[in-house]
Image (cartoon, rainbow, N blue to C red; front, side, top):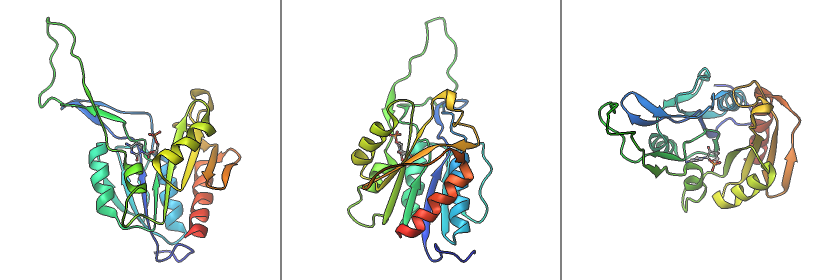
Length: 218
Ligand code: C5P
């Protein structure tokens, strides 16, 4: 294990999309690649932290030197996160599906002449809000992400208050930015001292700066 400013600290990082099954062969997903979360986990390891990395089925490679927990659904991610606590800091960079199919079918849904299937949804647990609002054993620092396409700062600022986390890393994921699935990111760090825009840089640089800030805050 590396020696650094986060030596002796335990950090949880969630990453990637979740997959919410419709039936055994189909699922609902999103475009998260897991690149930013993987880079954050690696940057935390480089700062000396013991890292628990809880990831959905992400394209990005898995970080080295972490305790790796692979999950598929939001509900599984919630359980894995609860199993990883207590931690000093928790970074929620996963793109968790807001909804799951209320009753996924155990067998493949077939085409019928009776018409089209309809899906009913149920709300997934909000992992970030749950951990942020823990009465006991809350991590000292809880960081959420806000991927937005409109009114990025306003939406992210109200998200920080609603969820109860300490920081929000906000980014504009409008398709023309090329950020989702790309190698660069342009983020604004929102904390109780306001909004701090970082210049556009590689996701690994965002991760390194964030790890340094976490080290300072702990
Ligand atoms: O509400 P929204 O999905 O935009 O919030 C994004 C933030 O909340 C991210 O940090 C994400 O990891 C976290 N989140 C979560 N559980 C959910 C939904 C979002 O942890 N069910």
